[in-house]
Image (cartoon, rainbow, N blue to C red; front, side):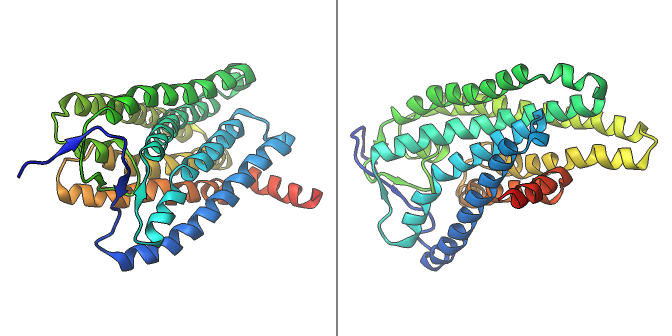
Amino acid sequence: MITICNDSHSDFILLGFSNKPHLEKTLFWVILIFYFLTLAGNMVIVLVSLKDPKLHIPMYFFLSNLSLLDLCFTSSCVPQILINFWGPEKTISYTGCAIQLYVFLWLGATECVLLVIMAVDRYVAVCHPLQYTTIMHPKLCLHLAILAWGTGLVQSLIQSPATLQLPFCSHRMVDDIVCEVPALIQLSSTDTTSNDIQMSIASVILLVVPLIIILSSYGTIAKVVLRIKSTTGQKKALGTCTSHLFVVSLFYGTVTGVYLQPKNSYAHGQGKFLTLFYTVVTPTLNPLIYTLRNKEVKEALIRLGRRT
């Protein structure tokens, strides 16, 4: 059978879980609850980090950047997911899909880089505590944050146009819950070898390399912590790192499953749930992980509550 393709700017159809309508109805309410929790939790982290002078240190500067990033990341796709899951109408305009792709790639790539920077910050704090304030000075932190957001933007400006210029099949049915690169590449019946190579290179640069750096940093941190004679000192050092390592595991564990998985129907079906996890669940859990395991944040919340 010949598949007709065209490059017109007509609407796309995000299939989602359309073959399981009851699942979509259930997911709608689950996602809605998670979305409100994401907004509330991350807004609180940003507010506390800005308002409390005791949190005006590099660790919480980067944490507030992560929370702001998660707010934007979820808002770039969750409202559309909720609309699609609520009713039979699952269309998204070409412009809407393009904007979502640009923003989705930008913020996703930014988070990959930001998590590396946060790991390096923890490495300096634990392995070079006496030089920490000298090394991680405010100007450097600002430059690192700009680097993260800028790298994500460059990645999006490179890969998004390359994906959108593909001739898409006339049915315009995207077998995913959002407009992301792997699903849009699959929608084209032309030779997408160059796009696949580009996506693989980007995945290695933004996923594999950062993960190696993060694991190496925490390997060194673990060696240093084990040499600390004080049990209290060990707990304090581990307390500043375990939360971040947990967040890294959640994010990279799901994103790599989508962008580095083999191309087959089973893997792609699983990919929808993985996409749902890192777009909805992970941004909700991040503020909970940092507040529940972080004494300084909990104390800052108490102080903020008393002032209000």
